[in-house]
Length: 139
Image 1 (tube, helix red, strand yellow):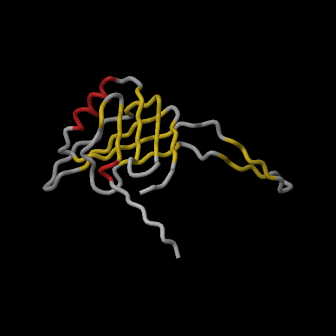
Image 2: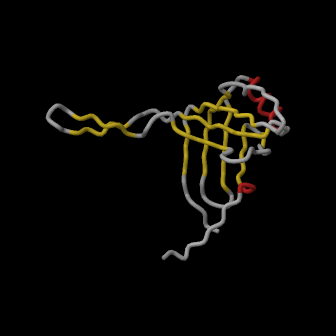
Image 3: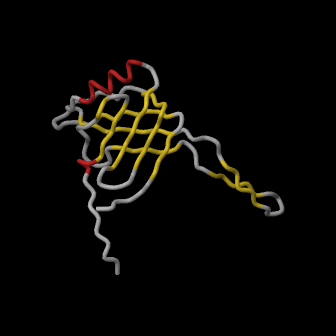
């Protein structure tokens, strides 16, 4: 039986896109970062010989989900309209998880919808090279 005890706090997740610190996250998964391709693929020959093929594709996507009422939407809109590349850095300050993209750009503007409750805007950013480091939590 493990006696490990850790603490995670969504409040301690910091995100910087260009020089903008983001907040106003939606409920549930509010940041996703994933590579476009798997690191390796496998090829099997007719006689069963196996070759592991390393994929050179290091690109990926980071998606931010923010509350529709959050003022950060205006900042993300401004980043999208600039139509240039910028760095994104994500750090879980209650642990050791990190994500970094030196050259990222906004893929598109979220759809707009209005309802009885506050909605969620999803902002997708494509990344030329996406580094994802899982480190767990120390606390």
